[in-house]
Image (cartoon, rainbow, N blue to C red; front, side, top):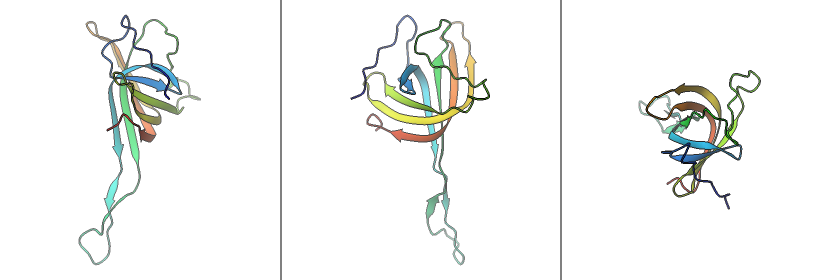
Length: 144
């Protein structure tokens, strides 16, 4: 049975799509989550035929991107992404995405930080956008 998930602190966070757990710890509340999987399907060519004999997936690659709110005050449980540290820049993260409203697990992502950036807004929440290069994606019971 999954552990209960605490609702967001309305004084800090609103308008989020999912609860994000990284390495088993709640890392925050993400929004604008996008997962892209490429199965790299290619035709099987054969001598003596113009048309392919079928299709085959030659490799798999995936990325995910999401936006976190920038917190100007340190919060307990917030997980850092130490990509500035050469020894930790390629750390793998296991990310569990949980639908905030239904508490169902959407899926598990495993990957390393590929790119990161941020935007500061005066009349909106400031966001930190992070893209992960995936090693694996496993859909769970909340993914239909």
